[in-house]
Length: 245
Ligand SMILES: [Zn+2]
Image (spheres, protein in one colour):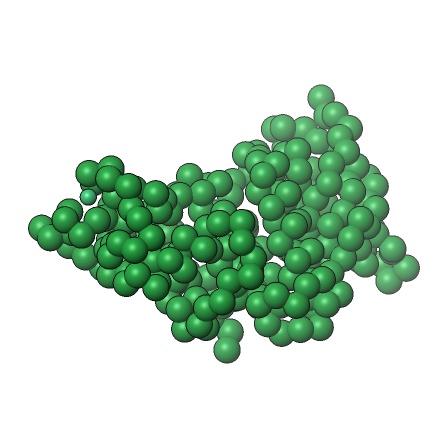
């Protein structure tokens, strides 16, 4: 039995299928990641075909059958597209990195309204605001890690549970996460955060948006988060979109 469902969805990627159709992967608000075929979408006259483009936010009506891998789209309406992201290389690079995280690190039939809403929000911010794209991405990266169960927690030492304070020196290894000065003594350390860098981590995990920081510190944090994920998820090989120069 298939049911007719209506949901908002972001286009993650699309491929041509046969002579006339397209298959797309979506992240939908109510069902998480789904694949669906859009019949007739390759025709140049197809309005629907034009809407099925990466990062577009759509309203979908589809026939859904849980046992089927590819669902069937019956109706598409465009809710929002992000023209400024497409015109600006920096914005595009980080928006692509966000799409890549969702493609690689979420599973079909697992859904999170928080991931969906958070992603729509960050794409709108990237598109409409003049805030630093890299900074917006790093904030999203922390949010995303938390939502997929790999929170980079900053509140207390992961060994003795003592609260970590803004002026503390803290260390980090990929297995344990953050540790206090005392606990790091007899443990393997991948990285030491000085006060300035630790404060930046706290700022990036707060609701504040007007954070002043150096580009190279953001690069460093992205690098640490990627390695942290690679350590815990062996299939994850880093974010390709960020390797484009
Ligand atoms: Zn400790």
